[in-house]
Length: 116
Length: 108
Image (cartoon, rainbow over all chains, first blue to last red; front, top):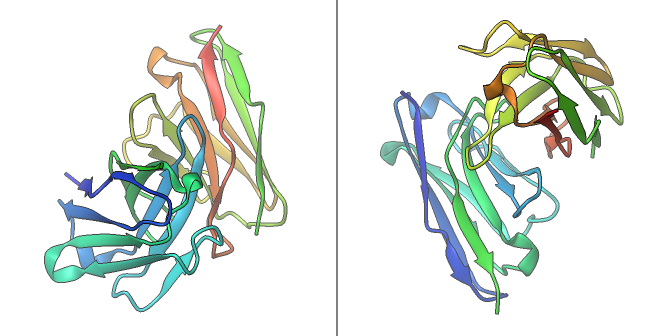
């Protein structure tokens, strides 16, 4: 069974940083690209960032470009999202998802709240 | 960036009835269109990809159609577990992949 478990969420002040992690199991991690998708409270889905199987290709939404960095460690079956210069509008539930384009499995999410 | 527009925002349907959800792309995405279902408090689940292919384990009452800029998700006979929010997503032009704003299917 595919499992994706996010961690690292929390409350942070505007301008602060946070690093999300996603632990993957139940599939061959380095066979897949991976993505982060967020959902602001009561709102829809917003794709944030994606990374291919070996980390050689990454992409970002314009809203986070230059502030967020996606990475992966295939030896640890883990995906990461380093979030810097956080803003109130980054407040959301951040889902880790298997896939680079088509998102075939999703984690339950890690809640990030940016507030002073 | 490709804008995905879903309609209606909310669809009220009685159990056993058919539901038809629409998704329109601001430019052609070929058949690179997926549908996801999200129930309250749960992560989204992939239903349809390639505009019309059901994902593993998805019941046959879910069907997708369309190509280019116009797409439809049809639920042939709504079951109680189908009341949820449905999102379309294009994965033709990257970055970014883009989602529609969602259609909520509620009990009439």
